Image (cartoon, rainbow, N blue to C red; front, side, top):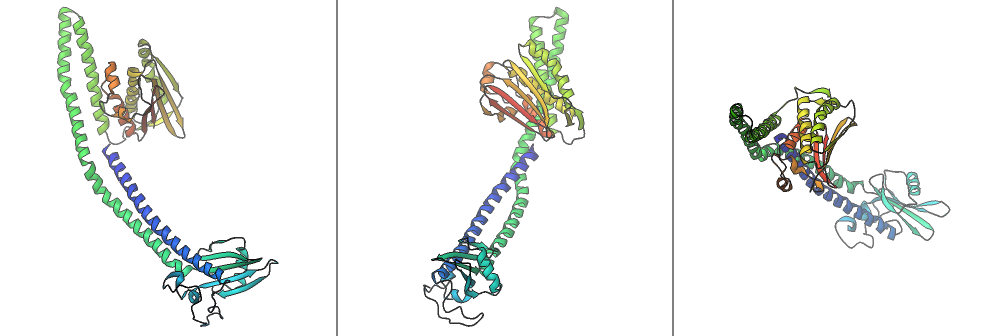
Length: 412
């Protein structure tokens, strides 16, 4: 249990840190990319307002041209408002007439030929604005019946954005690795007090069970002596009944401690769970009948399980005893196998059962106030034993109330 608790702590803490790191890095990169996209759109918008070209900068390819800043700039020194935008932007603009003929309005890019630029523009004619080939931003606008397509090469401006992305991914990955390594000793320190308390509780339960055995044996021996001398009486029968209950109780305590401290799977083997359950159910049917209750079964034949038959027997007996004690009129047992998993369900009607999850029933010595007031005997150990067995078999156990019924679902 402690190992699972520590594992759960590490997973929960790691996922929380992962979610935080992922959120921060996602926001940083999304905002960064959005800013670059907005800058690119401002450049294409400038070009659309100036008929698809920066006047004074669209001379022959690589020619110095006129370095006078084009109109419309506000004199800013950064981003699209920089006076150097017209000189540094790599782009082309193609005009497409209604009859399909084209005219290159501007061509200041060396990575594609003018013919390729025209074909590229034709492929974008039905669009408005967006990215093409990852690092090219385009805008399509209309002037009367003429369609203009401008494509700018924004790879240089995008490079810092991608650098930030890669740096954040590497930094985030390193941070998560460091977090995981740090959680290993932290988790050990966190669960240490719980481990100590759990060890003390198991020792107390074990010692209590051991200390009870001797006086119970003495009491039962004295009872037998009295019966030999004077014969059975109501008092000796009451003593025998109470001693038997306490002996069963100490036996359950021993079982609980043994299951919680058991390690390894040396006793695991494949066995017929259907046959085992059918055999265990047989004597319970008579006991249920004596108490005016019905025991219904729906056991699929040939269900095999790889596990410890002794522990599984403890599990089945614990669940059946729970149903025998708390069922109002019936207990239904179902065993099926679906997709390689064994599904074992116990359903009984019960008074005052609350709808929803009932995880507290698996706590050792837990008994609800309604059960205590009803006078139903029990020590709150049976389902703790069931949980320990299921845990040792890497299974899942769940209890819930539903429409006046208590549902116990086990998956192995």
